[in-house]
Length: 379
Image 1 (cartoon, rainbow, N blue to C red):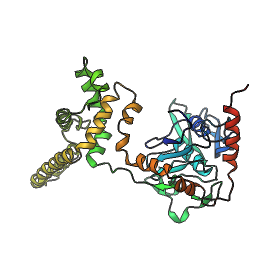
Image 2 (image 1 turned 180 degrees about the horizontal axis):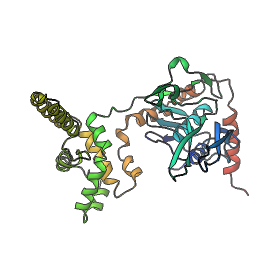
Image 3 (image 1 turned 120 degrees about the vertical axis):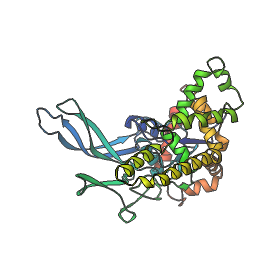
Image 4 (image 1 turned 90 degrees about the horizontal axis):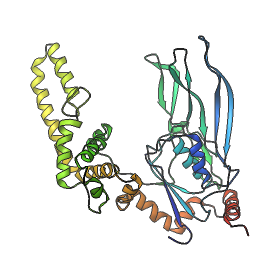
């Protein structure tokens, strides 16, 4: 499309993070040179353990700033989509954009992983991962959602506790909006995502869709590419029925070859009952097995549309870039649709970012000057 870009949607849903350098690069797309993107506070490993000596660290605080002019025009509205699986480096990007009021964060609260971790080798060539620092967004908040306490150990290990609401602190964005630390990034506009069914979670956890897609590809060596690139859906009712039968007899098996998602647990319980002299309860356990099979069959029917979509994505992704496949389902993405409508409502979008119109935004002013200078061809 020719002309200025009206809205840029950055989808970080399900993005569990990656390299810190990549997060800095992406954040710099939207923010001007010299803008603080994040900081870290903690320790850095300065000497590896040798001959049984301990790891030596030193206190080290780092501030990371944008190194070049923004790639995206400051006149372009920015929407960042997040959910509970958005974590670590992806949260750094969302936090930088939110703290500098550069865009609106939409979706669900992010995961809340604000720890810097490093690997160090031990004498036996194994490695240990150490938490050496914490991430802080430009406003100064740490989005880590858990604390680990050695004074309350559980089975010899530090206890893991979610930071309570009363322990959270508030901070201000560049234009005075209130944001809080701990527990991830809270969206500016909360839009609940689709609830994933129990069966879908089971199948995703066992990599069911991708495994079946591999088998489907092998069975369609001659026409797979043609079918995947066609407008018609690959996953017909017949394909779905085949997937359902395959999942029940193959994929739903655990590592020990059980035939249903819960068969391993049932087998273990049956063995325990018999060994403990309570074999009379096995009949009730058998009835429970049958009931679970009925529930799974019911979910295969009730969740058919969404399971077919997951399978469609998996199969087509074997042949074409996943981004192209996802684009075909954008009309069905309710979070994206609401975010897009929100960005098109000028007054609502502006009010969410600038509740007090009189407060200037030095970042946007700097971005506008840099963008104009950087992207204007020299004569």
